[in-house]
Amino acid sequence: MSDRTTHRLSGTAVLVTGVGGRLGAELVRAFEARGARVTGVGRADFDLGGRELVLEAMERVRPKTIVHAAAWTAVDACEDDPDTAYRINTLGTRNVCEAADAISARVVFVSTDHVFSGERTEPYDEFQEPDPRSVYGRSKLWGERFVQRLGPRHVIVRTSRLFGGAARNYVVSVLERARALAPGEPFVAVSDQLAIPTFVPELASTVAEITEKAGGGIYHLTSSGKPCSWAELARRTIALAGLAVPVREIFSRESPRLAHRPPFGVLMSRVAVLEGIAPLSPWEEALAGYVKTLGAPAPEAKRGRA
Image 1 (spheres, rainbow, N blue to C red):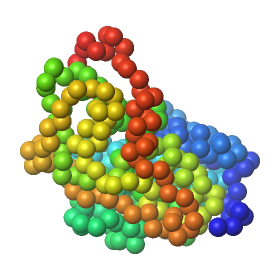
Image 2 (cartoon, one colour; image 1 turned 135 degrees about the vertical axis):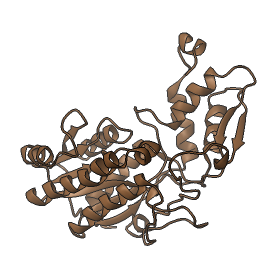
Image 3 (cartoon, rainbow, N blue to C red; image 1 turned 45 degrees about the horizontal axis):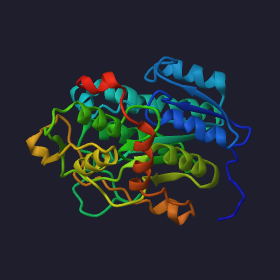
């Protein structure tokens, strides 16, 4: 790939939504590292589903790029309250896109593997047709469609199973729950939902790189490495933390949930590879480094239950 950038970030105004989430704060750091002047906004700054508030906020900042990472990601809660899911994930994205169109800003939208059914046995590349089976998946897919209607220079990044960074995530939850178990009590996790975990700091850095160097359209970005289940991710996390906690694997049907989860939500990053973007490092390596940063719990945390 040429060193020439097509969307140079240095000195330009970038607005990142969802800074209170798993990815938002890392996106701010990643875009600042490329010299952008970044404004981060969260739930307290404006109501994403409020069209006029979003338009006013974007008009004040007038960014050249809007990285839209804000979403309602509580999958079961979306199923129970579809109006809120569509208001935030779909109409909120429509509002961002309308504001971007008004100020000629580029949109980079963070989406999910849940736009696919997960019924395949092979990874999904960017050219597979989405087929969501949950309210959350449908709400994100319709958000994608609003971004696509803006034109080919805008970007959709689909990813899966985020861990790392400062926000809460599955790895943190596993350690808290495992440390609260009685001696010999197993940690229970699902074994028949496969995907590739994704290390948030590397994802954010690659999103910034794609924004600056690549074209538009859909990109699948996850860490590299083999697909794994929630049970395997829990087992590795517990072992890396040095905890003597067994993991008991169960099938999804043994722990029914309100929303459908893709049984095979594995994403293939075909487009980024074709455009010369380096793959993220293996999730196994990233997990090992991340667990080390979490350290041992405080003494009072050891005595309580999570």
